[in-house]
Image (cartoon, rainbow, N blue to C red; front, side, top):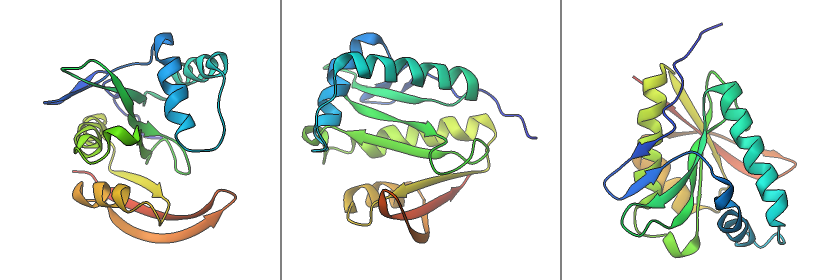
Length: 167
């Protein structure tokens, strides 16, 4: 079994800060999840989810991190590495931003920082799975050098698998 360096849990870009979750993120995280149109979540349930994310980070050494804009200080989404449909050796990059934050390059900027953090852990490949309808997300991944591998269907519907080889 290969061992990897622990991912950096504090990433900064020109406009963004990615940092560990705090209980105070729960209400904004609820609002972000509500934008999916799949019902509402209770803040208490989201606090539990945040605790689970933090525990998983301790176990795996990879993290899904809240994104906040550096100047405004506001929570605009999350980005990071997860096991998801993949493995700890070749994790998935995941991100989601408020609709109001779309179209400003924030996803590309945050995901680029996460790719760099993944490289620093010593990993050789990342995956991502995206709905085929999600053209903006597919564009972000293509800008970051991800290549389409296949299309598959599971209990959550059809999704495109993409990979990125790391140096």
